[in-house]
Amino acid sequence: MMPVPGDHHRVSSPPKQQYSSDIHVYGGSEATKYAAALGDILEGLRRYEFWSSLAWNDVRARYRRSVIGEFWLTISLGIFVLSVGTVYALLMNIPISEYLPHLTIGYTFWLLFSSLVMEGCQTFIAGSSSLRHHRTPLTALVLRNVNRAFIAFAHNLFVLAVVLATFGPRQNWAFFLVIPALALWGLNGMWLTMVVGIVCARFRDVPQIVVNLMQVLFLITPVLWSEKGAPETLQKIAFLNPLTHFLAIAREPLLGQAGQAISWLAVGAVTIAGWAIAISALRLCRSRIPYWV
Amino acid sequence: MAWVDVDNASVDIPIFDSKSMSFKARVATLCRRLGGFGEDGASYEIVHALKNVSFRLKDGDRVGLIGRNGCGKTTLLRTIAGIYEPTAGQVRVSGETCAILDLMLGMDMDATGIENIYLRGYAVGMSRKAIGDIESEIADFTELGAHLNYPVRTYSAGMVLRLAFSASLMTPHDIMLLDEVIGVGDANFMQKARARLDDVLARSRIVVVASHSVDLLESMCNKGIYLRDGCLVECASIGETVSAYRRDIAVGAA
Image (cartoon, rainbow over all chains, first blue to last red; front, side, top):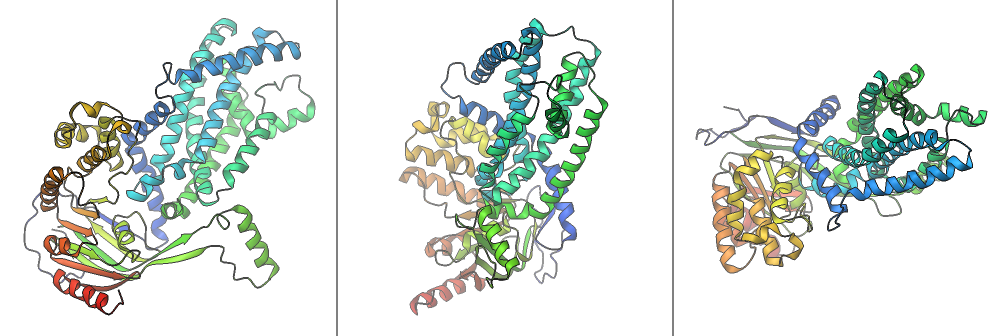
C-alpha cells in the first residue's frame, strides 16, 4: 500500500479496483525537467491512436462532403506540375522529359516541407482544447501534424509515380535510398514542428513572418530550377541552404543516383542539431504551453 | 490508495493582450530595458490564480470546491490534473486522474456521434480497444439510436449534451475532477444522468466537484474547500466549509 507522505490518517479500506500506483509530480526542481521532456516524447509516441485518428480526422474534415475528397490534393498537384512543367521547360529550353520528373519530385517534397512548417506553427494553438482540458503530451500534437503532412504527401505520390513511370529513368538499387531519406524527413518534421509550434504559441506574429520567409525559401531552393547550369551565385546560395540537401537526398535516388555524400552529411547534421534544439525547447517550455494557448 | 498532495502551490497565469503577445512588443521592451529608459520591463500582466495553496486528499474524500466566480476553482482542478503545472510549490498525485472541465471538449460538429465518442476517448488517453468495449454501452445510454451515425451538427442542443455527457462520464477513475457538469438535458435524461454520475463517482476513489450549488455539494460531499481570490480559506468538513462561505457572503466578503 502506498504511504501518503506525512499522512496522519490511518489507512483502512483495501483497494476496491485495479489501481495504478504511479506517482505524478507536477512542478518542482530544474533537474526533473529533462526527464519530463523525455517522458513527454515517449508518452507522445505511445499515444499512437490519439494522434493518428486526429490526423485522419483533420484531413477528412478539410474535404468533407466533397465527392473526390482528399484526392483533390492529388489533382491540384497534377495540374500544377503539368502546366508549370510544360511552360518552364519551354522557357528554359530543357526537354520536358528531363524537367518534369525533376520538378514533380521537388515540388512534392516542397509541399511536404511547407505543410510541416506552416501547419506546424498552429500545432499547439489548434490543439489548445486538448492541452487545456487534459494533460496532453506535446509530442502527441507534434506527431498529429507530422502524420497529417505525410497523409497529404501520400496522396501526392500518385502523381509522382505517373510522372516517373512516363518520363523517369530506369530505376536501380539507388531507389531504396528513398527509405532512409523519408525516415530523415519524418525525424526532421518532428523537431521542426516542435520548435515552430512552441515559438508560435508564444509569439503570435511569428506565423506571419514564417509565411513570408517561406516565399523566399521557395525561390532559393532548387525546386523549379536545377543547380546544374544555374548561375554561380545561385549555386552557392543553394549549397548553403539546408533544404537543398533535403531535396537532394529524396530526389536523386528517384532519378537513379545515390546523391552526394555531402548532402547526406548535411541532413544528418541538421537532424542532430534540430533535435538538440527541440529537446531544449521542450525542456524549457513544455509546462508553459497550456498557459500560452 | 489514491492521494493528492498539494504543497504550497501557486499558479501565475500570464495574460498576453494582443499588443504584448507580439514579437514587436517584446523587441520594444528589450530595447527599452537595454536603453535603460526606466520601464519595469514586464510586457504582460500576470494573474495570481492560486496563492500558496496546501492541502491533502485521501481515498474516500468527496470534496466540494466552493467560491465565487474567478476565485480559482477551475485553475485548482487543472492543477490537480497536471494541466497547469504550479509556478511555485508542488503537486503530487497518486492514481489516474480524469478531469471533466467541459463536456463539449473536442466535439467535432461535422463528425458523427460515433466518431465523436472515439475522439473523446482518445483525448482522455483510452485505447481503441477500451473505447470499443464500452461503445455500445455509451450508444445505448445516449438514446440517440440511428442519429449516432449522423453528423453532430444535425443534432439539437439537447441531443449534443446527451452525447457529450454519455461520452465523458462512462468510466470511473481513481481521481475524478468535475467542473459544473451536473444538470444536463431534459428532466428525464437529467434523472438518468444523475444516477449515472452517482454510480461513476461511487466507484472512484477521490472526487473533487466545483459548483456554485452549495446544496448540491452538501448532498454529495463529505469534505469542502473554500477558495477566495486564489487563497485557500477553509479546508474542512463540508458543513464547516459551507458555513465559512455563508458567513463571508453575509458580511459581503466572499
